[in-house]
Length: 146
Image 1: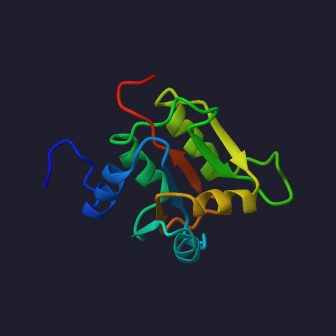
Image 2: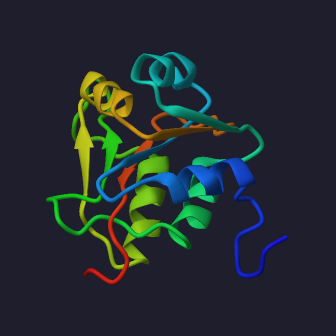
Image 3: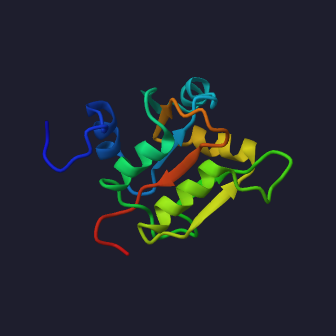
């Protein structure tokens, strides 16, 4: 056990986060997301955390992962199919969690654009979250910048 680390961060996930470089993407996805296929297509690492929600994993990850400050956004959610203006409850919660960290720069991607970006990710974390559209892509930044 390590001090000052959220206990839900498994050794596998911690290793993946520590192995990422600035500009690499981390994708936190719900139980509905085709994580295995997308990870395989993009050669991403796949970490499964079936007993947790994306929000729980996000809280833990935000304690150890610096977010990008160089681009127009540090994160992206999946746009609701057929209603680009809709904000699902999970997305609203993610935005609040990121805002608490001083980050308002979360954009949306059309569903297939989100899948394509996820294929470029370094790691995909599939949770047991049953909420629809509980998918979030984060870009790693550097420590001490921004």
